[in-house]
Length: 234
Image 1 (tube, helix red, strand yellow):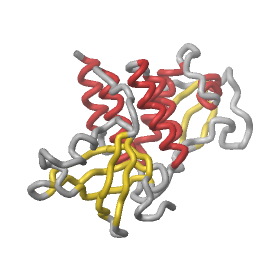
Image 2 (tube, helix red, strand yellow):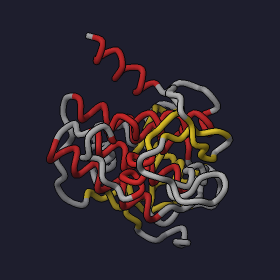
Image 3 (cartoon, one colour):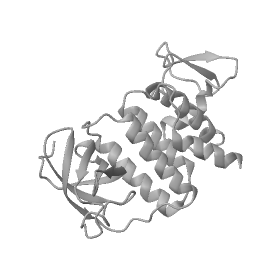
Image 4 (tube, helix red, strand yellow):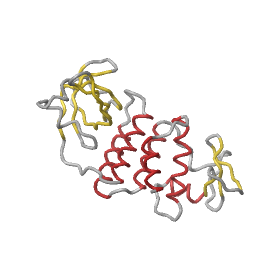
């Protein structure tokens, strides 16, 4: 765990006004995880923090204090990263909402942080590619303990590519039917290997992510997902 005055890489997930001239910023830090801090005076036009506290940009932060709400004493931009545009920008906001909603405070996830930074880079460079979301969702589910085993069924036997499986209680059961909780063994094997380019895999990966994310979200809707669905209907 980093000491209170250690400079640490991170990203701004969200910010909102605090008192007359300050901000409360929610940060995703590599060594501390999700942290909230007061950026005193950051809303003043002359503040050195004001132009730096941007979303989707790599920033190095220094925090003080040991309470749940820290104080941000320094923030330094760490170089150019293309900001996602259009639909890719909504994808980036979706990643932020997932991290905000599903990660506990002060719970470090360095591997997930690296994946988040890589996903933002890809969204900025490649645009709105759903494979980026699926990979991040799956790692997030793995990190918080909600990802099901993609190798074996409820008996511990290897999933067979030619069979269909239904999710029940976090385990796979072979089935002849088809419903939103049914997936092909072959698609599950591709997901386990991170191969989303095979025919039909991306759509099944999206269904599986939604099914599993509903558990830690306890059925509460995601705002960015609703916006994306509205845009798709248009």
